[in-house]
Structure formats: structure tokens, C-alpha cells
Amino acid sequence: MRWLALLLLLGAVQAQETIAELRARSYGKGELAVERTLAQNRGFTRYLVRWPSEGLTQYGFMNVPGGKGPYPVVLVLHGYVNPATYRTLAYTTRYADAIARMGYVVIHPNYRGHPPSQGSPEGVFRVNYAIDVLNLAAIVRGQSGKGPLAKADGSRMGLWGHSMGGGIALRVAVVDPRVRAVVLYGSMSGDERKNASQIYYVYSGRSRGLAELNAPDERIKAISPIYHLQNARAAFSVHHGTADEQVPYAWSVELCRKLKALGKSAECFSYQNARHTFPSGSRADASFLAKVEAFYARVLR
Image (cartoon, rainbow, N blue to C red; front, side, top):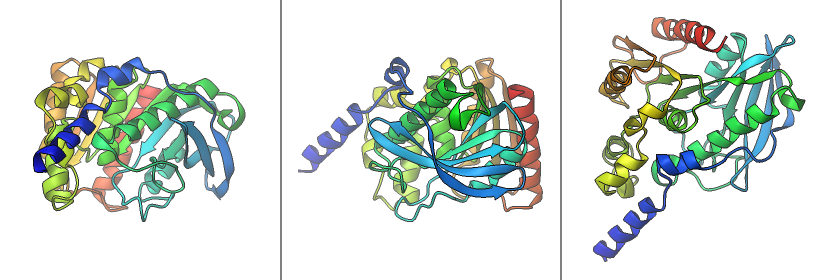
């Protein structure tokens, strides 16, 4: 029975999308629509928005600055939050708000299975989350300058990802060559074997991640972004606290080394004694936001 279960798990891995398969797909059918206005904030308006992905309706919020625009677009991708307790205004809302005040249309997606988005959460290697972001990115490009995206310039698009969201951003960046700027903050690894080990042994107490952990090496290489960094055309800005208690700081060091060895545009910052999520108002947080603002201004404007 254990042997059969392992085969079934490996079969599930084999059914997932490799980087090559993701790059061969097309994205962006349908349109983004505004569900309702959530808030009128200083410098921007927040809307609840929806868009289609793989036959499912996905939701998130969009911050649109005041003024005429057009503004570059940044997709803000949150880290792991239990889907059962997830709310649209997640812990990353303050980052989305800060980036909107810098002069960007910001869209913060709820991943599939994170209410009210439809579908089942996670899936092997979290590939479905990346597919939903790829569909969102393509829809935004195609709809820029029209309707709810009248102030958006989707040709100037960046990503921002924290923790698991960083891992999703990295996958999207190696699939979609039109992404121009990527901020990674305490990001999960681009090596899915390392992620699986952390999820299985550390995060979940051996309740999640076994299928990924038992995947054959060739599948890990086919599906892990770190083996496909040559495909990315974006500039990268990598940030990590040296005392991160959830995601090893060494993972960002490794990523930076590989990006620079490939001749990619990459700036890399460490924050001494900072943990996984910088406290609001802390020196590390202020420094991080200032660096993000300078990076996006340089690359997207």
C-alpha cells in the first residue's frame, strides 16, 4: 500500500506543468472587472476585482492612484496564509498601499481557493497559483487603457512577492518574458526540492509536501525556476533578513549568485538581524520600501 501510494503521489507530480510547458501555453482569456469599491484612501482608490483563470473566477483587490496616468502596474503576491482563514485584505495590504502611493496601479490577487476565489488551494508545487498570475498579467496587458484599467500601462509590469509569493513571482518571471521588474522579499527557493523539504519537515510537521519531496530529480529540474533563470528578462531586486526564522537567508544568497553568473540585472540586499516579515515602521522596513521605490522607478518608469 505504501508503494502504491508513492506511485500515485509521483503520478500527481508528473501531471504538473513544467517550465517548458508553462512557456508553451497561452494566457489571458477574458477581462478584469470591478466588483465594487472597497475604500477611498489617501492617494488611491481600492477596488474589489475579479478575472477568469482556467474556468475559475479569481478575486483580489486593485489600488488605482489618483491623477490621469497611465501608471505602470505591479502585481503584489502574498506569502502563505491558511486558505481557511484568508481574507482579501491580507498582511501584504500595507505593501500594496505603499506601492500605489509611489505611483503604480497595484493588483493583489487572492490565489485560487483563497476566498472568494474559486478552486482548490495549493496543488503540487503551487503551479496553479502561478498560472492564475500569468492569466492576470496577460489580461492586464490586453485590457490596459480601457475600462477599469484605463489608468494602467501593462507594458510596464513588475512583480512583488513575499515568501511563497516570491516563489510564485520567480516562476512567473521565467515563464513570462514581458515582466520587467521583480522584487523578492524573504522569498522561497527557486529549487522545489528545498521548498518541499522545508514544507514537509518544518512548516507542516510532515503533513504537506511529500509528493514534491519524492519527485524524481529530472522532474524537479524541469519544474524548478532556478534551473531556468536564463529565460527571465526582468531585472531583480532581492531582499532577505539574515535572521529569517521561516525561509533560510542562504536561499536568496544562492539565487543572487546564480542570477549574476548568468549576467542578469540583479541587486541583492541583506538586512542584519531582520526576520521573515519586517515590522511596520522598523529601520529594516523603511530601508526596504525606499529600495523598492528606487528600483521600480529605475526599471518601470
